[in-house]
Image (tube, rainbow, N blue to C red; front, side):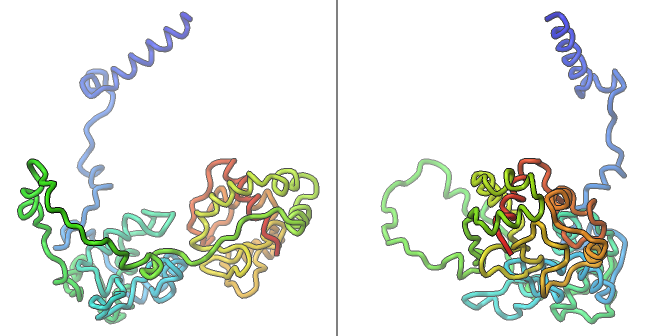
Length: 347
């Protein structure tokens, strides 16, 4: 008990010493330097304020885009499945089903640069250099027929690009024009009584994936696939545990944007995963694998339990140069579940 009290007292003393009031007195911490703040404060305004020094053109951007962005957004920024389309849609904003892209809808080019710099590529944000971002933005503009391929986009030429929908947005003046109507006691009289009708459905708006992931079932073929991969251990861990497979179906939601399983599965930005457990790497017909994967496949990589778990835990550490941008699963339970789920889908 005495030892516990001493530990608690020590923790309290450390917490107190680390408080802003006593930090300077005890020599703990300091004010952040301007250059340290600038390292993460990357605000970029529509007028170009905050743009870093750098440049890039669509020619270089095409190669960078192919390696960093095309797996989701297509080689020509046309989008893959339900991943966003970045090009096209000109003159469609007045249509019933408009196509909103960087070229057709976005009013400020600074939004594209800022978002890509902060958030892309998916799963590996913050790894692009300033010149890379300029080149990628230039390629997106070129894909929208807004610049020529040799136009050098830079902090100096940024405002030379005119976005087609720059005049399509208005200043949000609700604070001045409407907020006063929402203060005070509510009216609660003469409310509208018209029938509420559904005018549009999510599927029409193309925001709901169409694929239907079938219920995972422990079939004889699934058991055989597991046995082939790990003769002794896998049946016990994967095939006979419906609850683990059910948990794996939830984990697989993180993979559905790029991969499909089950009857009617098709290759997307990633290959189909039917029969993956125990299969030779790089063996799905019709899918173009990365050079990194094909190199490991030629060395005899087989997606057994251990290899699959190691890859899904840290894809980029397991396979340097992989095109899969997913950061990895951190929990052992998730790795057990996703492996069990995948094993339930035979070839």
